[in-house]
Length: 85
Ligand SMILES: [Zn+2]
Image (cartoon, rainbow, N blue to C red; front, side):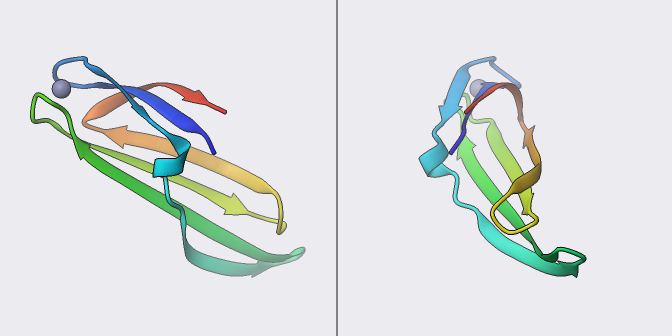
């Protein structure tokens, strides 16, 4: 799983979220030409030492089964600097 490096938007303190802390949940599914497409989403919320709330939202689609695509990671309250595989 990927780990995410980001900086607090307010105090610019760097944070690292380990891949093991990111828990994906299947949020929906769809039937497409090559079978099922499954949508996964993970939400990580924590507070910086300065009190700023940081939320990371990560999602991807599994389609066809076994292959990951459309991976998107966004943050509010912070700026993502690096996503490490
Ligand atoms: Zn901060």
